Image (cartoon, rainbow, N blue to C red; front, side):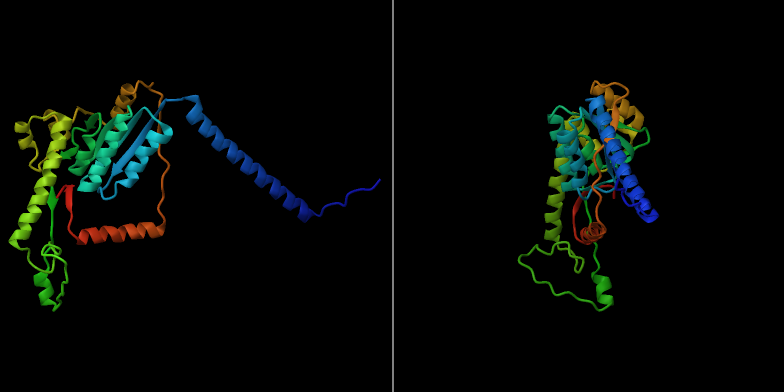
Length: 294
């Protein structure tokens, strides 16, 4: 009876490694499937989305991407929006504000939970939520607009550096640091700031149901503690992250065991991070109108 040739010890070791790798891959697939099953099948609906807004608001897309994920993919009944930000660009703040509005139109409850600071543009975002909860010592408010323009013409003259400007219109280089600002340019920029400020005031008055007469005294750019903000009607209640989480579960009709989930992270490549840093430097060197702490 013919017999198979005996494998060498080297071949046996290789076969063992291959079998081990296959088994490991199978176990990993089963683990992922089990985790997905437990998260999505065992407790359907018993999930709350956690979205974090931290740092200066310059790019709305990272936050809006998370909000859309919870609306369109996970379809959660409630989102806890954790805010720790001094504010940021007007357009970026309004983008997130509008996205929160769209989320709520789908019947999803949104609870804004303020951390250390949730001021200016970050407060603008918060007022789009169903409920705002702040710590007693949270720094919030700063309802106003600021535009800053560095002026370096004196320094440039000292170092013997001059710029030749070629432009298409009288106001195209408004805010340039290479020369003093003209009076008509200041009037133009003030009108832009005033209009943007009015948009902020209108949003606060509508969301918080604050009469115009009282709104004037609360929208001069001053900051408040969370406790002061509650007394003025700028936030709804006081509490920390866990308090906000319990409130979100209760508002959505979920049990205490509802799972908190995060949207998949969208990691940026090294090139994208470097490009983002360059972009931030560019914005810092050019003029912008911001909802932020000074």
